[in-house]
Length: 484
Image (cartoon, rainbow, N blue to C red; front, side, top):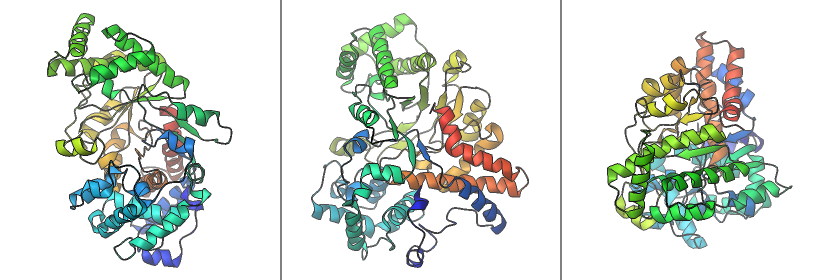
């Protein structure tokens, strides 16, 4: 973990007052509870990182090329950053979004825009991550601002020129034990195979099966995508049965390349079944372009149920990340593509939506179903009770908009009294920006240490138990739940 990078200096402490390198950052303010939290945090601070869900490209590590520049590392690929800059009046085009590698002078301009607009990030998790990355990874001891932008840019550029800042060196320095990526079912997984075959690389980088685009038959290009899926799988997808078989074959291919999970993100998690005849009729109508919107939704919901059945057969963990209205701003989607900061959460419902799935497979010994939400109202009302009964159900950590200090603590408070700690799945970073991985995991360890310290201080948990729990949350839960 980052503790090996170097101890805080007085200069750094004064430059980032109360943030970035303060040893007690994010720990409880009450002195007695803070002392307990320190002991808990110290016991897990240097444990390895297990990252079972994220969006880092495996080719980054397979190629092991130097990161190009600070803008490409911190700004352009990270929609957490670009969305708030856009809201502050900075055009996405001026941030290099969707434009590929930038010339050095343009990259510096992107970096200046970030630093000039840092006040927009005050109080956000993004601000915490950004300054922690700069301080802990790159040794920056000045707060980003219009005045310091160029000096910080040059310092990071000098670091990136060193072999010790290449992706594989940082992977080792960060203490990453397992890193799961997110991959299209048609991907040949060549980068994963290259890493697995390379004796000089000792980490584990695993693919995750993400079939969303092949389940949404109303989306443009779906029929062509399904035809390509059949071609790659060696199956005729002209029929519903062939479509299902192609999915099964590609899941098996992923499993042979180390995958332990599948990842699904749709508008809802309804799993109403269709009869075999209905599924065939709707599927053929979708291929012909004549399926109604309601039929397309019904087909996806049925196929999500089929994916659970497949998980019972092949043992791949099933992650559900529902209820996000992706591409909320059509003009931005058309100009810059997906994952550019304008995906907006919507209300979620799990209890009735998942009932068909759970009645069939909820007690199956091979199913592990990890549920995530962006709707906090479901934490205690639906998710915790589901995980508190069904042995297949685990609660995923707060992610995306909820991957922030106060939201993480609200999650723990909302679910623990009903589901405990063992029904949760450990932390996921959901990262696209590689250098944010260690600071996000460190944030989680600090927050869980603080939450457990309060239970100890209130005599609701013995301290030896709290040490067991915080260690389990960091390494035990993700290893067990994600089959690692």
